[in-house]
Length: 428
Image (cartoon, rainbow, N blue to C red; front, top):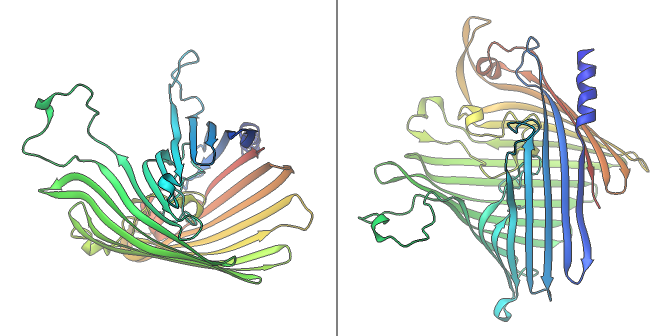
């Protein structure tokens, strides 16, 4: 009865209304989104505790103006909050922020290129390496600049992004505050390229590389983070069969430790009538427990939309930490059903999670130590209903069944974990 009550509460509280785009003519467009989502959270592996309920809100409003197709100005404001987070009914959390705000120049100096500067989302490919984390009630965006060379021919993207600037802006010049001897600013930046190649309408290849540097010093003159990542993504569709293959390699140093890590992902799908079936595997390298004090071999997808890939319950969105630096092997099956001429869609994902490196853990219930690499299994179920054009209702329900690693990490919880949500999205 209690579960039914909470499900009813979720159904009432979770409403998302989004107005994706409205063309006003003369180069003007407006964008808007209101998203409300509530969740019933029993992810602690204990039926003895009371599940949490959350309702979050994300409100976005944007305006775009194009001048002769050569200059585009875009501004998007955002308010994001968890219900009840304000200190009182007459108080304000004052969290209105700029999610995106940029200028884009098309064909400057008569060259075939685009320049985008300001604050903007960075989304590439499947979002396995760079994503906007649209599920999150805040979402991700960067301050920076991006060049797109020959967009419809070569399609090479060059970008410089600021993750964090630790030095305050200096308005009134004061020579006495500048450090001597000279030291580099301890900022956190990303520099990279992304090349998109479309062989035909059914095949595409992305090749990329980026350098992630946090100049904060940790050991002597050693930067906290100095990591290069190179890789590629391939998409292919061959009749009813389709596939996506992705790979990345990281090298450099992290907190004074040498880094060498890899990611490999492969998925295959077969579509027949109303059904789409898929099998996939994601391998993120890990660090042997005996080497963790001196080496780092765990791949870190720091800027990906990890919610899309490693289970909807979000146990593994904070890799390497969420995997104890052991990495992640995720083997999963996908089922998608969309009946013909129906407004309903059904989805099911079944994951088997393992660590990439095994570890010796002590199981309190069994009172013995075991060598294990099993996190457990997760089942994600979704039902989507298309109410009218542009308006959908999505319900999701997930369960996690513990393996020995999770039992050791989350003791004394030993029950099946669960999580559910309901979301409505309306777009113009």
